Length: 142
Image (cartoon, rainbow, N blue to C red):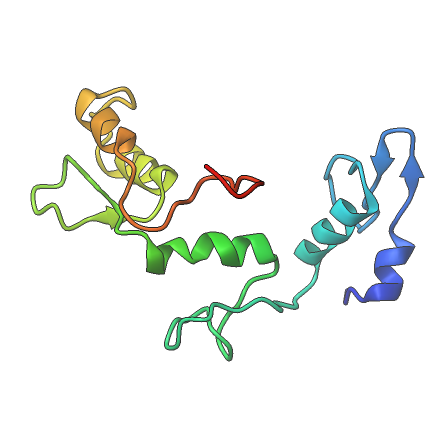
């Protein structure tokens, strides 16, 4: 089923709890705003209108792309982050752009290690060098 502007408008159903997706088989909870429902509707579409700006990346223009802009932005860490190094891999070559990527790697490949292992906690507590990834603050001074 192709999703376009008309069908997105057609699946909105404002209720007391918000806006419900009525795409067949969708079990998503109601959304608080029309904007969030519209954003969600992208998951039912085959369109991938957001592309990585790094030439040669499989997710760049002509490649796979992303359904949601926030996914494209998060993907940018693959190119920008110096990475979190797995403390348990002997070659120390396994680097992950986000803490949750490293945590998943440890859970899958180092099943004998606990999520609270001191070595893992140490790596996760170190903020990678590079551009700040925190929330931007309003105002001219920090």
